Image (cartoon, rainbow, N blue to C red; front, side, top):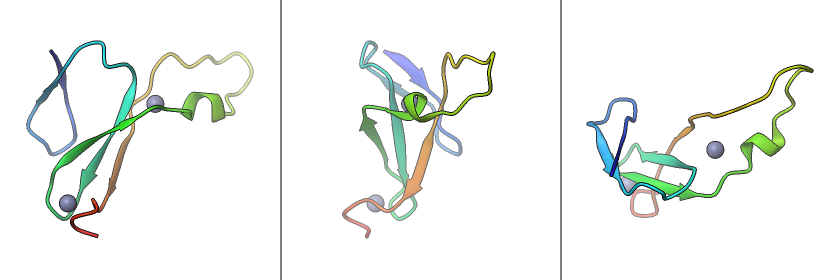
Length: 67
Ligand SMILES: [Zn+2]
Ligand SMILES: [Zn+2]
């Protein structure tokens, strides 16, 4: 298990080796969801000489139960 720190959330633990993914925090019920997959770095337009190694993204919104 690996610790996952989300802003405003108690520390969560997830299975290691799940691969890179993002999290979705529902503002309605406060639950955190895993968002599989990521194309962010492929879409980044970094200036010359920069290379991305990692990033963290938290998406805020409403889950289907709260929409
Ligand atoms: Zn919700
Ligand atoms: Zn990503």
